[in-house]
Length: 167
Image (cartoon, rainbow, N blue to C red):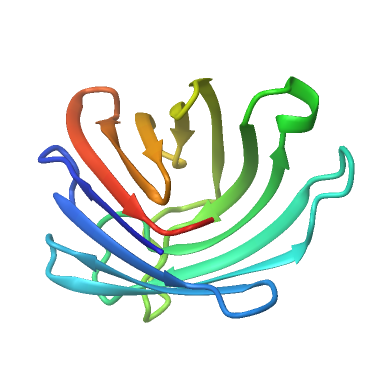
């Protein structure tokens, strides 16, 4: 899976993420950031899958040498709401801590993470996220394995996102 974002208002300005999901619950990735010119090594692991209304649980790490963007560790509870709302939708709630590869903390405490997404018409989704510091919005269109959209960083500056891959 491949995803990218460009928004001149972001500290990183542009990001490219490449993900690989071998069989099982592990997902590995690398993120390439424009500012600073660095790479973020990433891994996510789904501890349990959603069963009924009990959420899936995921933990992850994404570390880089310099502390721009959101490197660190996280744990989230994730709900696929589609069976309940009868439209493609999801929600996650969790905590995260921004740290660098050398273990330097970029925050004094754990931060609340939140996100929700819903299909508003066939192929078009609206997403709202809280990354522990700021709220962001995404409006995207999906056709097959390709997704493109607008990304409102802090709801102040507008950028573009694009992605490819089945999920």
